[in-house]
Image (cartoon, rainbow, N blue to C red; front, side, top):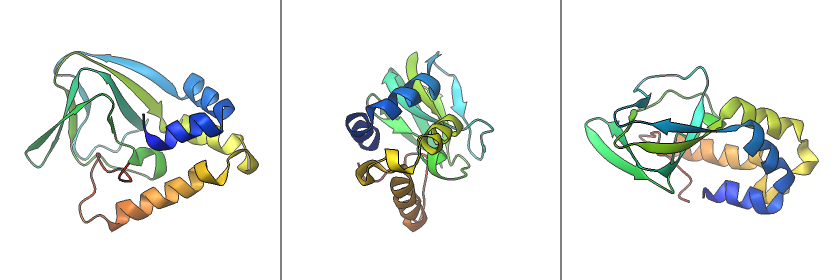
Length: 146
């Protein structure tokens, strides 16, 4: 699991239930399916969590294989984002997706007092964007070193 969301499950399970019910979906992929392409600014941005199978992230001719429990495109949750590579299914795969707009809506509607500082999405998001801006070459694999 992603460390921030694992902490949220422990600290604010009532909010995470809403996120799981309204912001998450499952995608079943066939080998060769393209999830996003280089330069695409998605109309419906999503973060992807690999549950089964293998995905390939291609950037500047370099292939990175992604398997469970890894995730891709976290940046869409915290900032306006253009994908910096292409993500395809290298095998049949099962991927959980988090809809960025639904996640942010649920986070806002839950109210400021509902989030302990340890899992405040505003703090985490600001830290993520700071790390993204400090990285000389951010990509869809960028994370906070979790």
